[in-house]
Length: 143
Image (cartoon, rainbow, N blue to C red):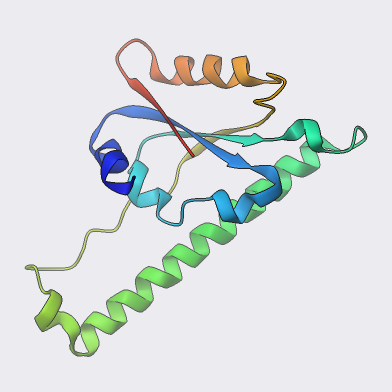
């Protein structure tokens, strides 16, 4: 799977990334930054139809944004730990002529709450993606 989608980072494209609202962390790809590169991401959080009818959707989107910040902080600490390990004696084994290039920070342009079962907001996701992509960029859907 990772090999199939690894080419995305080298393309000029828009990525629609689908996550499960009820298993957000289980469906979030830990190396999303490396996969998408600097391409814009539209995050589609699925199963909004399973939220209670009185659930505040703006509050849900704020929670997702907080989790994205936590994800980026975790990734930054992970990369720092890897660099420290390389400096502490592993560089001979892994040295490829310099420091690994840091992936660009994850660029989530928009978060949509969707229901793939009922079709809620799915059209809005693709309209948003087409607007970002214009006529010259490909669209990728992952997740």
